[in-house]
Length: 187
Image (cartoon, rainbow, N blue to C red):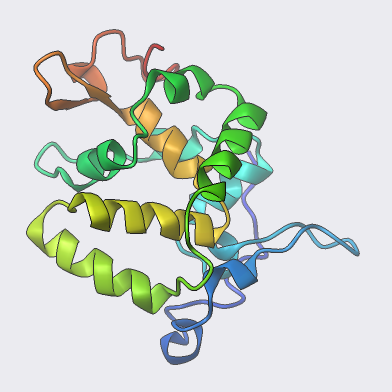
């Protein structure tokens, strides 16, 4: 397991007045001149598990590192409203290249070019305070993952952690038939 040590070059927390208004997609760049590829996940040092997941070629790292509290529902609705509880994504959980490609496909139909961290916070914090996002808020946060560099990490997290139950509610982990802490949700 490799942990990136080159992240945090544009830390939002250290310099929010400057880094809060940077279009996040401008932080993404391909590897070159001996420097690894990077994106908003790494550069802002926010949810860095995504950057580590990519370098380790294991998108389930995020899902396996989060124990989502039973008393909270935000992520359940975030995942549902973005369509990330699908059988298609569950089938891709263990396919790093396939999930990364599916994340690129997801982002190709979204609008995220001008999303900044401050714009995200204007949507995310009120939704978090209410306890769950509206569909529009969830979709905007999904757009934000694209601006950060890829939606694939959150897509894999959702597919691993949550499911649609027969009664129409959203289950998590062991609520879902066949869930396994190593393998995730069955497809």
